[in-house]
Length: 177
Image 1 (cartoon, rainbow, N blue to C red):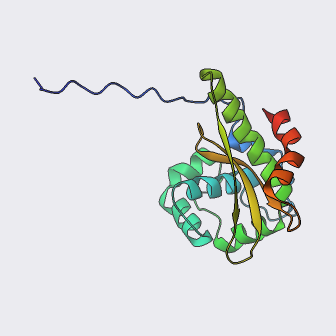
Image 2: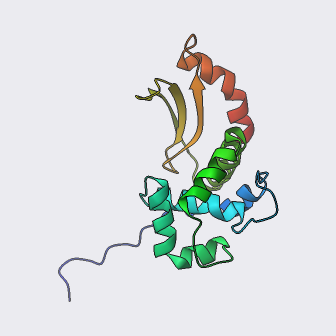
């Protein structure tokens, strides 16, 4: 018998989204020619997301993550038990339209947010702007606290400020929520 009571199980909000990350990525247009495609676009993009969320920071580490975790490759729908090489990932990411990728990720995260919000009464988001060091681009982020995730990001024009940029995007944000 222990002197300390057993810890209560953690009741985390487990979102039950209607679509998976793979479903969100499957709506993207694959920029590659049909001939020679070895890895499905949704699987490659999901591998990048999973690896980045697991702390990997570059394309070589993403490739290594896939190589070290064949069960993840299976779960993501890879046909082969080998991850795409770094040049394949780089070429594919460079050919994608950033706005389409951002919209697909934002819609998926919004779905998670709606699911988390349905389990709780209050959900909060924070808005913050940061300037990146190397390129000096000022970026505005909307961060959902319950998800611990930024769901929207946009570059702020040099002549504008964060409030102006947020006013321009607020209609889009409200439509999604």
